[in-house]
Image 1: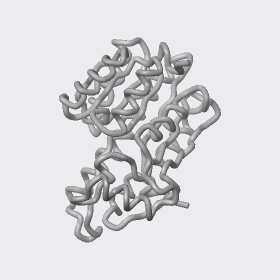
Image 2 (image 1 turned 135 degrees about the vertical axis):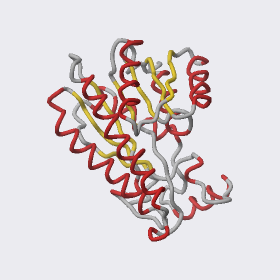
Image 3 (image 1 turned 45 degrees about the horizontal axis):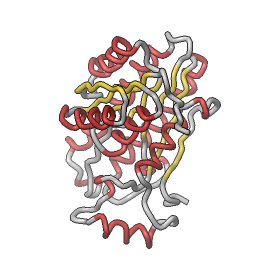
Amino acid sequence: MTTTRFTGRTALVTGAGSGIGRAIALALAAEGAQVVVAGRRRDPLDETIRLIEEQGGKALAVSADVSRAADAQTLVRTAVENFGSLDVAVNNAGVFRGGQPLADLPEEDWHIQLATNVTGVHLALQAQIRQMRTQPAGGAIVNISSTFGQHAASPGAAAYAASKAAVTALSRGAALDHIRDGIRINVVSPGATETSMSLRPDETEAARAERARTTLPLGRIATTREITAAVLYLASDDAASAVGTDLVVDSGATL
């Protein structure tokens, strides 16, 4: 039987042009949601829309930079004007700039990661919460963090880890602030996942699989479907009492 946990609901997914974000948007649409997909570049978003419509779903794309308050507000307004509400938001947009020791990280790369990974989530949360608290049913928000930061460290990723640890702390604080407004805020922290971000320089997918076989307790990296399942659980009524949770999906890497 097809699961339709989000029928009649409107969802917003940032960073939905590829990878985990696209997988989340497709899964929400498959379970009945009307989906607004957002990202900086239009072409990848159009491909996400095509895939959603191909499976019978309904969606629209909005080009946006979440580090700008006006864009975050536009995304929420677009969802409400087109579909009548904003019931679920997944803040997935993020960037990684690193690969070298912290002392050698260009200042620009530090600021870019903070702008998208931290300020972007902060501005998105503000816009989303302000809408959801006007709705009788409130809403659910899931922020995508990372095992790097709150749970683990890795060479060449100090600034990225700092930004993702901030996402977790920001989410927990916002969850406490707004649960009485009927808004549940939670976090999913993926480890290595089957996207390009988990490939080392010049590494093939086959080499990555071999590396994971010997270094991860599970013996493999996570699939985007597995990350998506965690996100949809926290966004659904199945997780009605999950508030400020940070759900780690990392093949056992941080055990």
